[in-house]
Image 1 (cartoon, rainbow, N blue to C red):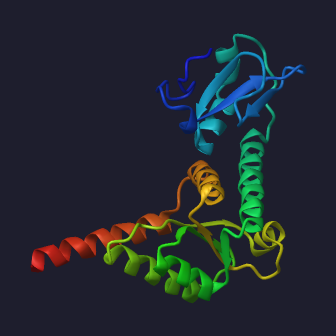
Image 2 (image 1 turned 120 degrees about the horizontal axis):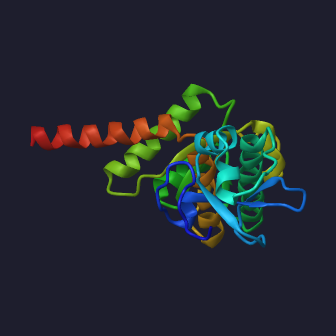
Image 3 (image 1 turned 90 degrees about the horizontal axis):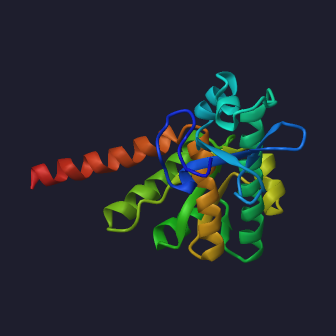
Amino acid sequence: MNDRTCIVTRKHAEPDDLIRFVVGPDSAVVPDLKRTLPGRGCWVSAERLYVDKAAAKGHFARAFKRQVVVPPDLGAMVDALLAKAVLGSLGLARKAGMVALGAAKVDGAVRSGKAIAVLHAAEASEDGVRKISQARRATVHLGGPAIPAYKLFAEAELGLALGGANVIHAAVLASDAGRAVLKRMVALDRYRGGSLDDLAMLAAVAGEDDAAEDVE
């Protein structure tokens, strides 16, 4: 049961690519995101589709070799816990001065190379996202890092976590606190299936670079 193999895919993986589950005193399956809860555990690939499949197909009962109670909202429960972890770490990073707020400051943080990630509220306009995406592309073309961008939260959620209203765009700055935020954002984004818009942007950058090389 300590083998880090997904009970759905049967593939071995590193802990950060899996979610650990244990059985509570009431026989209910409980997510153990910090991997600290006592008892025998089993592992599921850290994407919601696998958690939902494990819940629906009886994988937990087979893994624990006993009858267990699987909460009907287990997939949503894990999502909420991952989101809470991101927002909590964002709040800590903000208090440490490691989060830039507002389109202008985010643009500046991206172009200066200080940003390690960008967050857009779900309500962010296409134009606002496009302008910051241009800054991210420009940074890559100038030899800087590919800075990931995410749409994980509503404006109200970001505002509550960051202590201000109308938080539409934010940049996480390079620091220990910032890297803690990024790690949690990556986990939440992966759980939700990945940022297709962001992947498309990075693919476009790669395509442009390849085209430029062909011309040369």
